[in-house]
Length: 191
Image 1 (spheres, helix red, strand yellow):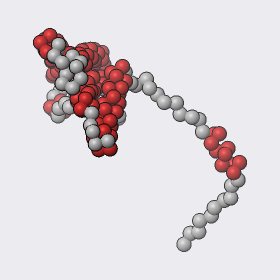
Image 2 (cartoon, rainbow, N blue to C red):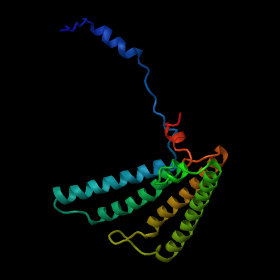
Image 3 (tube, rainbow, N blue to C red):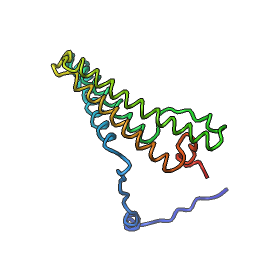
Image 4 (cartoon, rainbow, N blue to C red):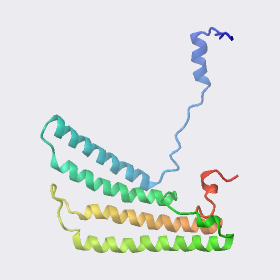
């Protein structure tokens, strides 16, 4: 049986251990404008949901507008946050087929996927713009703002996704492979 031995240390020795540690600086360089915008909209949504909960269950007289604002904020968070996912290549993708393809067909297929993604987001921008022209002047139900404000957030999200997909495609072309072809190079498992 082993016995634990504890060495007595003074308060000064404990205090000096904190002097040796270098304070860690937060690295915010990995975040882009769409991250911060999605975060701001998220907190507006969270405050609206909290206000809805508080007025409904504590005051027993809920504010109807909080639910509508929270719903529209969720739309903004989803579409602007999707631009972050495009930038980080975090959307759902199937890379199983690339394991069975040789390098040249895999590179060609990956490039086609990049071009399809760019075309899709470009077309989505056009469709959302047309939708805004049709419905943009309609008023929201509880607050009398135009619905166009909400759909401009969707348009911004698709525009950011379009720009980020072009950026990712260029990076893939310069690098010579994409996350589809070599996922291990992006998640740190490739050795």
